[in-house]
Length: 316
Image 1 (spheres, rainbow, N blue to C red):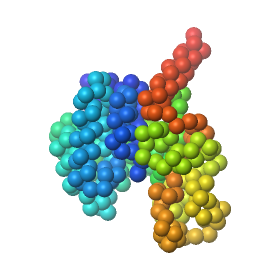
Image 2: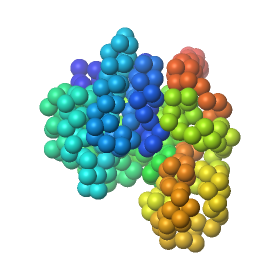
Image 3: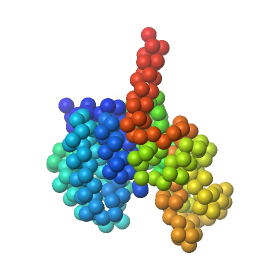
Image 4: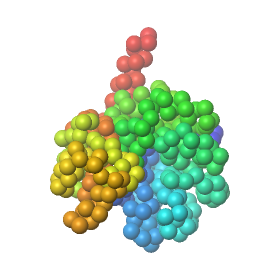
């Protein structure tokens, strides 16, 4: 059995709780893994490498005491702008983190370091060209960040992206973009993805490190409240329009500014992108409450099984 197959065999649902900047912390990861799904967080959410060391120890200690807990994963930004990469990677190796999710670069040497201790490497991509780079680097799975996803999302339709990616990568594909329910997880599997990758839905949970106003904004939002723009950080991403209004900005006039130009205005008001301008995917309409992770995963599993039984009944 491959390492990926061994990983998925330990999951209650074919689901990854995606790593979210400023939102995913030890509490959310521990709750997700303890509920039987792959819990992940960005290494840079820990302010220092020392804090990352403490987080990993805290999470691993909690999971060791939780029978049947799923593995954890850490997201590493591989771009040269991440000055902590070498130190954070050394910690990941020392803690033998089961899954490493790389972003902004697929690096064969990093993949080999993780493989050396038996870990898996997933790489997230937003374009077919980057699927090929991930394949060349030897990663174990590719995360397809499709149109409608939160954060720095791509623009491709998931069906189109899956078809493009399959031509370039023979390994497992993981689907991200507007997934919020158990039915969505089943749809991702039916479309050919090995796992679903769900982020925004987990922001609206009690364990997420997001302001309460952010969580309640997700409950109240619909797909039309999501804006896809490069004017916030210079890179195209999905953001909640009401958070722009809350910060005193006019969403309808963002197109008049150069990419990233808004950053200086935010700084003058002591505001920051991601911390005060909140990201979300287009699947927000399915978010109607702010439950504990355990309750949410129970619901996702029930929805997943109900949808599967319904389809099996129709096929019969």
